[in-house]
Image (tube, rainbow, N blue to C red; front, side, top):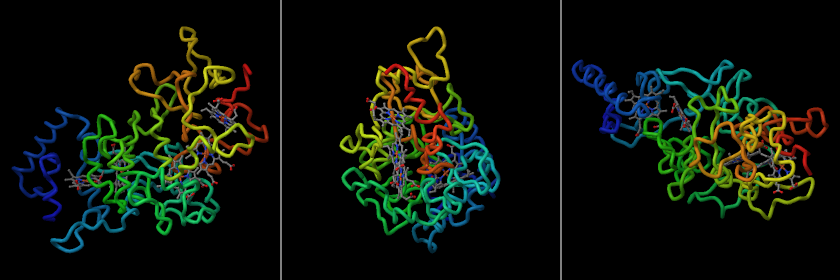
Amino acid sequence: MYDFCRLLSLEYDCHINWCMKNNVFLFLLTIFCCIFNIFQSPVICRAVVAGECEICHASYPGMMEPAEPGKPQRYVLQNKICINCHSNSDRDTLKTLGGATVPVVFNAASPKVLLAGGNFHFNAKDFGDRKGHNIDGISSPDAKNKGLPPGYDRRTDPSVIGYNPQKPLACSGSNGCHGDRNIEDPFQSIVGTHHAEDTPVDGSTTAKSYRYLRMTKKVKGVLGIEDPWWDHDRTARKHNEYSVTMNRLCANCHGDYHGKENTGKENPWLRHPTDNVLPKRGEYLFYNPDIMPPPERPDIRVFSTEAPVARENFSEAGDLGESVKPGKDMVMCLSCHFAHGSPYNYSLRWDYDSLYAGEEDRGGCMICHTGKGE
Ligand code: HEC
Ligand code: HEC
Ligand code: HEC
Ligand code: HEC
Ligand code: HEC
């Protein structure tokens, strides 16, 4: 307990009641602090810290236990703890815990709505190997890839540790996507983040990186604009906004899928061009062909949540949301893939096989490859 309380510096002034819960005066003072803090900066107290500490810190024992009294904290169960809290036994992908809303990335039952990252549910089932990232604690290592990320290139991985194929893929840490990839331990690589100030999203700390996607301390984290409900009710107008730094993150482990030398015009292509602007010509002028732009904006196309594009920069934030501009907006890994898992092979956002068979002639690839104008 001592170690735990020692961590509660002024930065954590709205958490003091954890230590002082038996002291009525300090308890009230803390409540006052908390309310005050909420007034001052709604973001700090918005999420996790709004709830009672015990709800999380006792439901997941070991989250901060020292190995022995006086020894450094040891995060027992490691990666499993992230999964336990970010899971749900039913089909909902948002759950409430300690007054905070937890984004659910792994549902035991088939999820009703996929959050922005998709869901590990599909991967956990038998023969789910191809449906996304096989995360330690949810699924066994991918049989085909033998633990290695396909297309791994040590030179494009900024982590000083690098990806270790002897160890399983985790949520965070050097073998994971979230947190600081210069730190091996999944928990240690993210600790402090859930309670830290998380705006503006400028990539300067883990909390201030888009969805805690820090990459490493030496490089800037992923940038983007975070939908407060993780895209639960995404529409053309209201959704996460991505930047091409997301491609950098994927290139941490899939560098070969990124380099220009591996993409081309051959069909079937080996790697789809990524990071490139939707050309302002030909078929791309009709991106998302089923939805007509508003009559007063004939120069834009309407954003498709099925095949989202990344933005070059966010300085024109007011003009984002619904509009997609050929000649400006870009193709990214997540135009076609879900980051966690999906019902389709290769964690794709749509059923590629049935697209091929022509069963579905509008969605997926055809949102960009409209076949018009060329
Ligand atoms: C909704 C769940 C939740 C609630 C409620 C919650 N925490 Fe946490 N807390 C976490 C998680 C998850 C972590 C570990 C990951 C992290 O630090 O980002 C954490 C980490 C911490 C840490 C370690 C951070 C560091 O900088 O080393 C402290 C201290 C802490 N919590 C204190 C509190 C206190 C005090 C309260 C009550 C006011 C509280 N927490 C309420 C989820 C919660
Ligand atoms: C006790 C529950 C709990 C545990 C354990 C926990 N989280 Fe979270 N996590 C939360 C809650 C609550 C939020 C929502 C915070 C918010 O609204 O900003 C969250 C948000 C996140 C987000 C999204 C951040 C954003 O910008 O919206 C990521 C990524 C994440 N957690 C990763 C992890 C990882 C990795 C671990 C394990 C090292 C972990 N979490 C452990 C409760 C937990
Ligand atoms: C920390 C390393 C790491 C990062 C970062 C990473 N991946 Fe992966 N990825 C892996 C590993 C390991 C595998 C192979 C094991 C598996 O499929 O679970 C893999 C497999 C894949 C597959 C094939 C899935 C399948 O089931 O065959 C796709 C698609 C993929 N990743 C896309 C992405 C995208 C998109 C991003 C960026 C959002 C990304 N990855 C970021 C490590 C990573
Ligand atoms: C235009 C759509 C599209 C984009 C953009 C895209 N991919 Fe893919 N990706 C696919 C398809 C389709 C497959 C399945 C290919 C196949 O059938 O072999 C695939 C397969 C993969 C695989 C699995 C390869 C294997 O052999 O298991 C990985 C890993 C992957 N993509 C990573 C990425 C990364 C990283 C990016 C961004 C740099 C990216 N993809 C961008 C469509 C795309
Ligand atoms: C987000 C938009 C987008 C999506 C979705 C998309 N593409 Fe593309 N695709 C592009 C762009 C942009 C180019 C590069 C065009 C250029 O620069 O000339 C391209 C190029 C290609 C090429 C190379 C030939 C050429 O015309 O340059 C092939 C083949 C291709 N895409 C197939 C696919 C397939 C198959 C899918 C579905 C798995 C897909 N694309 C999904 C935007 C997209």
